[in-house]
Length: 372
Ligand code: SF4
Ligand code: F3S
Image (cartoon, rainbow, N blue to C red; front, side):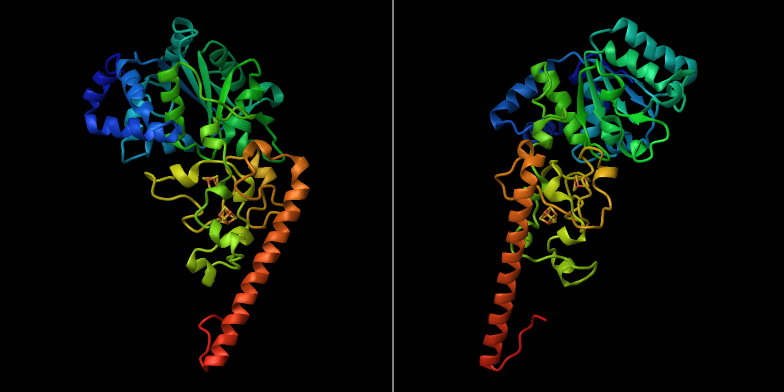
């Protein structure tokens, strides 16, 4: 997978144009929420960087995070992420297999100790001495402990590597956990999501290569640039929530008009992520835009904590743009839920008053309202 030791050489080999490279740098600066003046610094740093070695480990997973990375398209983010680093080990995409592949991983751990970046995808089983996931005769727990304690940096991509994800959902027969719990002594940046958004992962790598440190993190060791804001506060359907206009059942008038999905179970008021702005499929859409409520796929242990996915949230610990991810805590839930309930009631009353006024004016003018 190696094509030269610096990025310009690797890009030339892959046929990535200068324009694509500049577009990529601009996208990274925007994703990192850096002021535009940082574009020159990022561009220069990436051009000069000697590509660090990366190893990508996969354990109990569906390979969705690898898929997400490889299927990124226009601009060719995936190509650039592949070229930013020297990928020495990735079971799904490497040509080598068996003993050769495992020898390549061992070589990196020994020869590049303290210099390589480890990316982990999938949960790590701990029950029964970790026998539920083994590679080359070694348990996932054994491999990840060795690899992630000899690396320069560790990145957990996707829900399973962060907190155990689906594999850890009740009743968790294999004792699955995320990377941080499996290897508490390792420093980990968590990129939750099911799957991760490759723009965020690329941005973390770019930040590391440019500034030689990881970006600012929240209480879960997730980058603040990606996980610092409530989805509810970035949502294009928010005006409908504020106006009390909700989808009541799939395919109804509100559904066709793009109204708020809160009553259909949307977890956006409790979830933080930058998917409304970074989006998916080359930045074209995201779940709520596509008409489905958010299931909080980037929230802590969302399979257990956020299901059933189609039931409305019992409480809404996030009211208005003034409540940030850091402020969400059990202490504010009661107050905020009460405020939200009051807000929704007032909004509902306003809508009913508007409907009554509309009907009255229709009666007076002898016409009928178009609203049912
Ligand atoms: Fe958007 Fe969901 Fe919030 Fe409605 S509840 S405004 S659909 S995030
Ligand atoms: Fe996930 Fe919700 Fe965004 S399901 S992709 S956090 S809209």
